[in-house]
Length: 133
Image (tube, rainbow, N blue to C red; front, side):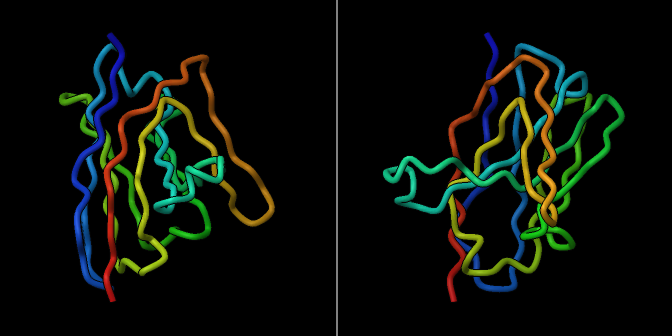
């Protein structure tokens, strides 16, 4: 079975750091693109799409980030563990959201929308990050 399991969320103060993990099973993460998305609490009720924030993949480990997190968040992967990570630094209240990993990517930088989709659309259960001021 294909599964993506996000973990590592929690409560952190403004300026703090957290690292999220996305454990992948059922396929090799490195052969596809893995993206992180987020959605502010309550926004799912408005049927808004989660905000894409980062991507790793294209079979070369390359990474990309949305303007909203560039310079503060860093994706990495451990191929031996088939796990992708999102290191989040200098967290802000507006980073408060449920974070999801998915077997696809999509985010904005400037006016450009970057996307990667290799025919698999799987999402993990989210993990809540709360940044308190």
